Amino acid sequence: MSIIHFPPTEFLISAAALKQLPADQDYEVAFAGRSNAGKSSALNAITNNKKLAKTSKTPGRTQLINFFTLDNHHRLVDLPGYGYAKVAQEIKARWQETLAQYLTSRQSLRGLILIMDIRHPFKETDQQFLTWAAGCGLPVHVLLSKADKLSRNIANKTLSQAQQTLKPYPLTTIQLFSATHGLGLEKARRQVLTWLKLAS
Ligand code: GDP
Image (tube, rainbow, N blue to C red; front, side, top):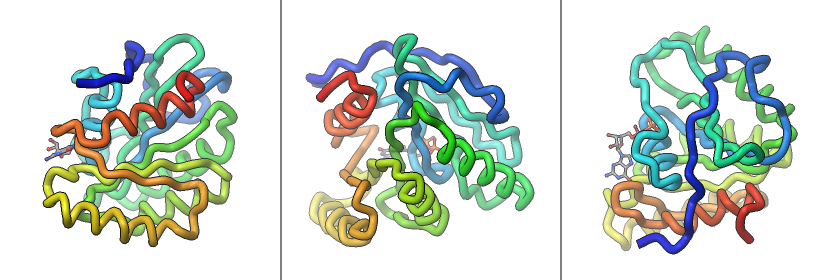
């Protein structure tokens, strides 16, 4: 049972290009991760809204940045899953450019939640994302997702190794997470709400 209340969150807008983003004011937290890492499941679990983030598994489709509102001053952002093997090089390149511009220019962006499948962490695109975020001085909180797929012992070992890997990124924190089992849910919620200045 959750003790942290997450405010009701609703879909706001899908943006296909940077010029379509909502006004850059107040507080925003963005979710990123490779396709299939468990990003939609994490968003739905954190907001306690099973239908919030819908996944499109169709490679090559228009990549949308989806915005959700908690209220007029607080937003969550679902960045398109990156690293989908079947997406054309051209789409990948365009998406990387959009992502880089979003990260570097968005004033209201207070923090990034990076979802990595605990069984396949630190793929090249994840490393690139961490490097970009560090370059922009943006804090990142990593969810090692699907932690229920490993034994508690192996999951904890993986977490320790990941903490070592993240040593060069001082603004980055990390935790175990399972959307299906609720593992780490409170901690993840607290991090999002803290960045949004809705908790301390
Ligand atoms: P996305 O592409 O990153 O949005 O990933 P999804 O949230 O759609 O999840 C991809 C797959 O992983 C789906 O089959 C989910 O059911 C599964 N999945 C996501 N989170 C978890 C988790 O915490 N535990 C387990 N066992 N499976 C998960």
